[in-house]
Amino acid sequence: MVKYCNYGSLIKLPETKAGKLPRILGVNSKSYSILVNESLLIMDFLTTSGHKPQFEEDGKKLIVNAPAKINIFLLITPRRPDGFHGVETLMTKISWYDQIIIEKTNKNDIELICAGDCWAPDDDTNLVYRAAELLREQGKLRHGVKLTLVKNIPAGTGLGSASSDCASTFLGINRMFELGMSDSEMQDYCSQLGSDIAFFIGEPSSICGGRGEIIIRNIDISGFKTLLAIPDVKVSTKEAYKNFVFDKTRYETLRKRIIPEISEKFLDLRPSMCANMLENVCFMIEPQLKHLKECIEQKTGFEMMVTGSGSAMFSLPGKKAVFDNEIITNVFEHCKCKGVIVNNNKW
Ligand SMILES: C[C@@](CO)(OP(=O)(O)O)[C@H](O)COP(=O)(O)OP(=O)(O)OC[C@H]1O[C@@H](n2ccc(N)nc2=O)[C@H](O)[C@@H]1O
Ligand SMILES: Nc1ncnc2c1ncn2[C@@H]1O[C@H](COP(=O)(O)OP(=O)(O)O)[C@@H](O)[C@H]1O
Image (tube, rainbow, N blue to C red):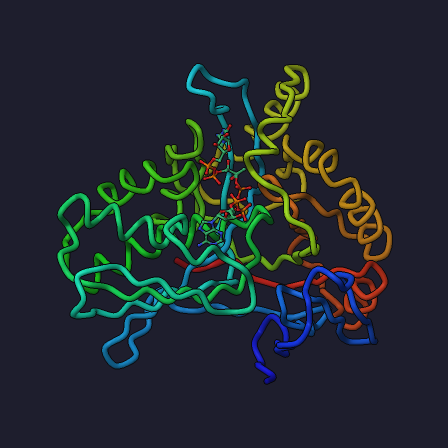
């Protein structure tokens, strides 16, 4: 069976034992094949992902598009008494989406189906399930609901897809069941389930503080295009924070450079606004990512930076730069990594 999708083509290999084969199985000039569970995924080295609306209706189904994010800057402060680190971050949503399809059912429970090219847990640890469960516990959701998660964005890449899926589930259930919850009510629920979930309820770009759950202010960012590198490696957020060592001098230097740059409400993003205090930890956990960054930078001339706790990286080459798809495809083929070109998300 071959399935075509924007992330690649999926060929089911029912006889194959997943653990016995290498991760990258073959490479040609436009694509490469890797083994995911028991399926062979044929990936184009470079794809583009365009803008989608937040909600789409399909008969009785509501489709919610859940955008990924990048952290333009991510400053981390020392561990707090509650075990979390403080953060100061500018997050912006991008035009690459998972989807949550919501349907009413007559059964008095929550059903979760995981579909799409990428893995997500298909049990009650999935943040899509947990959002619906929390609304049931709170007495807000009184119907049965079927939730189908179409997972296009790989987890553990710092693109926030699990968090976005969760926020989108609150938004979708609120809309479909006419619960009348305000954004701030939903953001309170989001904060109970994770640190950077509340951001996805709100505006396209925000500076967030606290452990990530406090939206300090929204910022209008002018349209941008960014090149994402999506390595075939995951980095756990928990592991990244566990290994983080606070460097006061570095924090103060970065803060002095970045904060004056973002004093205005309307911003043209520039590479000088980018910094990520988790990048070194990410490279310590997965050293091949540092080599990958160097490889892409050397071949494209674009500076790449890790988003969140990694493993994905992005480049902001500036307004006038043009991405030459053929050159980038060659670079990603050489560096054995997937690239996605995306825009800013408009909502
Ligand atoms: C690093 C960031 C940057 O935007 O994004 P991702 O890389 O995950 O996308 C976020 O801070 C991630 O937020 P989120 O993914 O919601 O993390 P959570 O589920 O709340 O936390 C997972 C674990 O990371 C640690 N953690 C998380 C946030 C924080 N401010 N300090 C921490 O020490 C805690 O050990 C926690 O148990
Ligand atoms: N809807 C979901 N999609 C993917 N992963 C999920 C989802 N819900 C819960 N998870 C869990 O969250 C982990 C990914 O979280 P995290 O590392 O913070 O992601 P990211 O770095 O991509 O933002 C997964 O390994 C998985 O255990």
